Image (tube, rainbow, N blue to C red):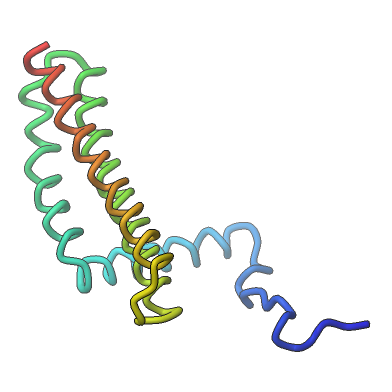
Length: 131
């Protein structure tokens, strides 16, 4: 017996791409993602501007290459987590704009991940600069 049409999983038509074509497409989809995040997400813009200041600053403030790497990686991690959080929020909003406990939980957990990544920046930068 075949499942009802609503239960049939539909794969993306782009899933069949392989090799360089897939990498090429993924690169441009990523650029579109950056553009969408910049256009629609205030927090991403703010954190990107902070990264634009902190990343060059890490080269001046850190004494050793490993310290620089840790400082820069901690800042980039904030951007990564913010992008994932924004994707979660967009997906939840796509499903429904109604208030729902599970939607709130998903968004709050994503926000908590961003907060932890920001605390991580403070801890790493503090240890490198004052530790």
